[in-house]
Length: 241
Image (cartoon, rainbow, N blue to C red; front, top):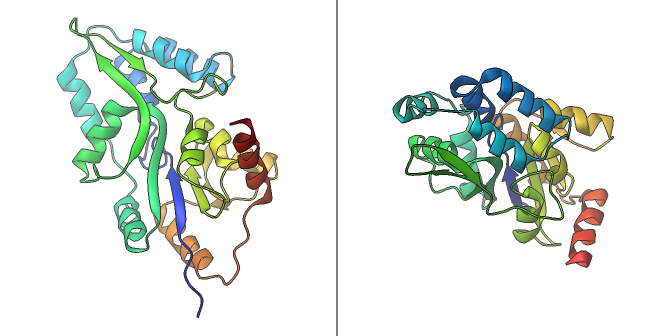
């Protein structure tokens, strides 16, 4: 009898768990849309890093209507199959963590609304000041790896070890680095295109039902091979540490 494998699973939030990239559309909606669009493009083109982009984006919003801001966040939807996926992970002893380069304010609000506040997550912080303004803070930054404000790679390293099978699920530019440190990658959007261009093995997915089906197949295999390049990348970090 084959013992089913368990996985350490790391999931992006914006555009992966949610149907839209909330961190981007918030600033297009409430800030200066033209400036916000330029800032996002500069980040994608690597002219600025994620920390700088969040600082600049926050400055594009003036005289924020907090109630309207909250209503807009509350109107955003998550993938219809994500709750089922969380239940699946719990039932099968797969550890699941959300790793986001977004902001905790909307992430926490959406997870609370969906009854998923118990899911562990790591993100950047949005701090509101007494004058009605707000600014970002970065509790999980890495000065040596400064592409993202929240270093997702470090969470993967901190919450897995050599004998674990690691899984990354994502769709965007902030997922390009951390996905490379995981054995199995589920990709769509920009992450999928990156994997194709760089010949990185991945599984395409449209929703979390697709992920469940593939994980069931993987966990039932008698022998499960880890991705060699991911092992090498993790080893590099261990040696540096």
